[in-house]
Amino acid sequence: MDLGELLNLSKEYLFSWEPGNVWMTGPKGTVQSGELGPFQEALERILSTGGRDPVPMELKCPLCGGSHFRGSARCLSPRRWVGVLRDVTAECDERERLIRQAHQDWLTGIWNRRGLALQVEEFLRQQERPCALLMIDLDNFKGVNDRCGHPAGDRLLVRTAELLEELFPRPAQAGRAGGDEFLLFLPCADRAAACGAGERFCKAFREQAAELSCSVGIALSPGDGTDFETLFCAADQAMYRAKAQGKDTWSR
Image (tube, rainbow, N blue to C red; front, side):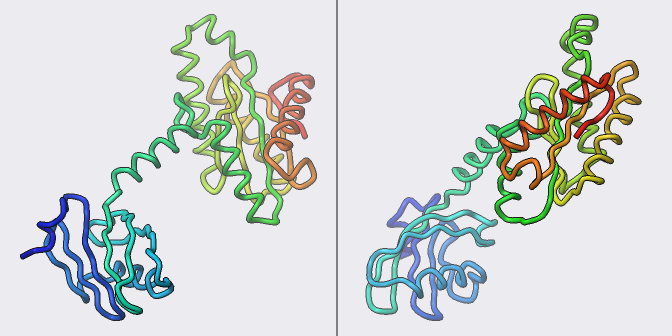
């Protein structure tokens, strides 16, 4: 009798483990040691370090199309375990989708402020190298909405996001702070690279948007700050200095 019949195995897998030997039964029938590949290796790494208490586990591997599994195993003897794993791929995919959605600008598809902040903070935690944050404000954007309507304004915002990603591909990352304000994060960029990026974008935007221009403020880490909010405020202040200089320019 297939032990799978004892479970609702549309998403669950029953397995047994002892050193060098694994078998598993699930929706596709019984799978034995030698067929499990990376799954067996991941399973053995978890169980070989466990004590006698039940072991919770979560792992992702190529078995069954790269499914994400979550479950637990119970020790039957010093070197033998039995447990159940549940395929939670759909749940994990939905969770990742919601996380991306929460950190993505609804109009342009680039990061929103919170999403870009997480990228900057992660870089600052892991790296001890300079980086730059640019604040970009579209000069006289309200006039576009007033003259041409909000759909035209939305198209301009989308095109601005596209232009940022075209000019500054990864590892640079673009975000929308809100309204007509955009952010550009340049990891490992020094002063010369950041200022060059500001000048380059001002010129490219002017050429793309005809009568419109933009003002760019530049903040550098570590000099202007070592966390996102401090850099954000410094870039914002620099952007207002650019506007005070007559717009269509960048400022440090």
